[in-house]
Image 1 (cartoon, rainbow, N blue to C red):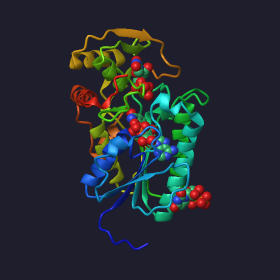
Image 2 (image 1 turned 180 degrees about the horizontal axis):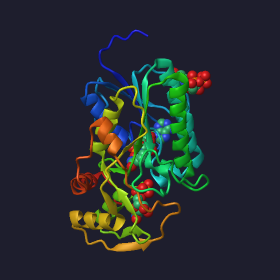
Image 3 (image 1 turned 120 degrees about the vertical axis):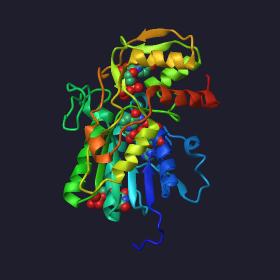
Image 4 (image 1 turned 60 degrees about the vertical axis):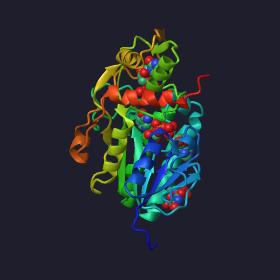
Length: 320
Ligand code: NAD
Ligand code: UDP
Ligand code: UDP
C-alpha cells in the first residue's frame, strides 16, 4: 500500500493500560501517529484521556483475540492483564489473549510487513533456579499452577514470535519485562508497590506476604518505556529476547520500609500467607540490553516511589 504520511503509524495493543499509556504518550511526543487498541479489561480511558483529541492519537475498543485489520508500520503488543489477581480472574481468557492475540498481531504484521514487538515477561523464568536471570536461562515454570495461564501463555507467544521470524522472515523484538511500577498502576491490582503505597496512604496495615525476605527489582515506568522504544529501533538482526528491568534488588521488607518512610505513614506491617508459586528471588541480568540498546535504568527506587506516591495522593484512588 502507498504511504502518504511521513509520520510513522504505530499500533499499541493494551495502550490504555499502565505501561501502554506511557508508551502511547512517548510515541506521540516522538512524532508518531498512534493507534491505541484496548478492550479495557484492566486499562482505563482515564489513562489516555489527555491524549484523546490529539490528531495524532486514535483509540479503538477491540479484543486482540479477534482478528484486526488496520494499516500501521510498527506494532507494540502489550495487551494482556499483568497482575496475578487480574490474569487469574479468567485464566482461559488470559491464555487466549497471549496466544490468539499473538497470532492475530503476527498475522497483521505479516500482511503489512510491519515490525512487531512483544511485551513478554520475567515470568517466563518461573521460580528461577539461576540468579540473576540471563536470557539463555530456560526457566522453571509450573505448567499447571495458578500462574501458568500467564507464564505459559507468554512463553507460547515467544515461541510464535520466533516461529514467525524463522518461517515468514518477520521483523520481531521480544522484551522480557521485569517488575515495573509508577503512576497509573491499577490501585487494586494487588501488586506489591501499589498495595504498599495505597495501604500506607490510608494508614492501613502493610501486607507482607511470607517473611518478606523474597526479592524483586523494580523498574520505573519511564525507564521501561525508554527501553521499549530503543528496542524497537535496533537493527532487524536483533530480535532478543532481551531482559528489561532494574537490576537493583530489594527484599519486600526493604520496600515496605521505603514506602513507610516516604509517605511518613504510621501503618504497621502484618504478615500474610505467601501465594503459591511466588518466586523467591528475581533480578534481571541486563548486560544484553546495556550492550544492544545502550540503555540502563536511571530512576532510583526512592525517586520513582515519590512520583508514584504523588500520583496515588492525587485523588485517583478511591478510598473505599
Ligand atoms: P495493564 O493491565 O495495565 O495493561 C494491559 C492492557 O491490556 C490493559 O489496558 C487491558 O485492558 C488490555 N487488555 C487485556 N486483554 C486484552 C485483550 N484481549 N484485547 C485488548 N486489550 C487487552 O498491565 P501493564 O502492567 O501495563 O502490562 C503491559 C504489558 O507488559 C503486559 O503484556 C504485561 O504482561 C507486560 N508486563 C508488565 C510487567 C509489569 O511489571 N507491569 C511485567 C512484565 C510484563
Ligand atoms: N490476521 C489479522 N489481521 C491481518 C492479517 C491476519 O488479524 O491483517 C489474523 C488472521 O485472522 C489469522 C492470524 O492473523 O487468524 C494469523 O495470520 P496468518 O496470515 O499468519 O495465518 P493464516 O491466515 O494463514 O491462518
Ligand atoms: N507481595 C507482598 N505484599 C503484597 C503484594 C505482594 O508481600 O501486598 C509480595 C509478593 O508475595 C511477591 C512480591 O511482593 O513476592 C511481588 O509481588 P507482585 O504481585 O507485585 O509481583 P510478582 O510476584 O509478579 O513479581
